[in-house]
Length: 137
Image (cartoon, helix red, strand yellow):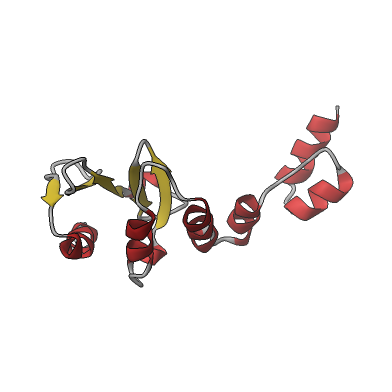
C-alpha cells in the first residue's frame, strides 16, 4: 500500500525530498536529485571523475572534461567505452563513443547511422575528432 501512495505522490509532482520525508523507506541519490533539478550533466561528470573506471584512463576523462563543449554532454562508462550523450533527457538524440584500444589508439564513433568509425592515434587529435562528430547533425 505504501508503494501506491509513493507512486501517487510522485505522479502529483511531489519532490524527492518530500517523498523521503513522507516515506522514509524511499531513498534517492545525488544524480536523481540532479535529474529532478533539470541538469544532471555536471553531477554525472563529478561522479565519473571521482570514481573512475578500471578500463578507461583517468587522464583521458580529465582531458575530455576540460573541453568546454564536451563537458556539456552527459557521460557514462560502459564496457571500457566513454559514451557522451548529446541530450541527457533523450537517448535517441545520439551518442559519441570513445574507446581506448590496446594499441594505444582510440576509436571514436557516433551512434548516428552511416557515420564511419575513426581510429585516432595521436592523443592530441582525439578532442578534434569528437567535436567533428558533434558538428554533424
